[in-house]
Length: 354
Image 1 (cartoon, one colour):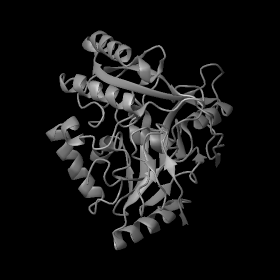
Image 2 (cartoon, helix red, strand yellow):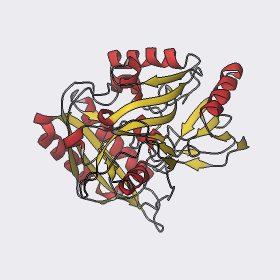
Image 3 (cartoon, helix red, strand yellow):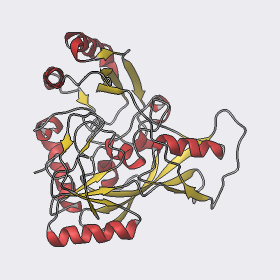
Image 4 (cartoon, helix red, strand yellow):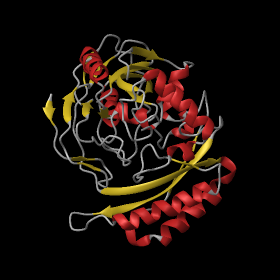
C-alpha cells in the first residue's frame, strides 16, 4: 500500500488532490483481504480501472483506499465460445489478443486504440459500433466474478438479479475481478480451433488520446431523428467549448435484457451523440462552457422522460442528482442492491450514495 498522488480522469475536470491509499490488486485473495480490513475499520474504498470515464467516479478522495485493477490482465480459454479476462485488461487489447488466436470480441470500444478496461467497460455498461448486431456489452457477457463491498465472492450470470445491476453501476456494488465474455471467429479468416486451456497476460500498451468530450442520449427507435436534431442544435449553441466532430448514431439491439441503470425499457433503442475536441497541449479546458452545456443538456433530458443520458461514462459535474435522474423506482431498487452488496456504503462513497 502506498500514498497516492494527484489523479484525474479522462475528462480532466474532476481531480483528486492525493493523500489516498493506493493498492494495486494482484488476485482475488488480495482484494478480499483489503475489503475485509475496510469493513472492519469502516474505510471508504474506490475502484479505478483505466480512468477513462469523465464523471469523477474513479477519482479518489483524500483518506480513501483506491483499488487499482491494473494488476489483473490475465486471460484463459476455459469454456468454448468464451474467454475469461482480468478486469484490468484494456478491452481493445483483449480483442487484439483474440485475433492472434483467430477470434474476436462481439463488441469492442471504438477508436481503434486501448481505452476502457474490461472492468470499466462493464461498470459503465458498454456500447459501440457493433451494438446493432449483438446488443450492448451486457448482452455479450457470460459471467462476472466480483467481490462485493461486504467481501463476499460472487459469480454472477445472466438471469441473476445482481447481473442486470452490475452494468452501469460505476463500481458501487463490488470489485470486478474478471469477466467471461462470449467470442466469435475472426470474420476475416478461416474458422479457428478453440484454444482450450491456453492462458496468458494481455499486453498493456496505453494510448495517447486527443482530448474529447462527448454526450450521448439513449432514445426510443421512433425518436432518434428528433433527439439527434436537438443534440446538434445544442452543440451549435455551445460551439465555443470544443472543435466539433461529426455526430454519431448506434442502433442498440435488444436480446435478453437492458440494464435498468442505462435504459430501463426492455426494447431496442438508439444511442445518438455529439462530441468534439475540447483541449490541446496549447489550450485549456473551457470548464465554465462545459458546465453551461451540461445544464442545457440536463434541461433537455428533464423535459422528455424517454431520453436517457450515458452518465456512466460522460462528463457530469458535482452534486449530480442521481435520484432524480434514475427516477424513484430504479433509484430505490439500486439502493436496495447497494445495501445488499455494500451495507456500510464503503464503495464509491459520494458518487451516487452519500
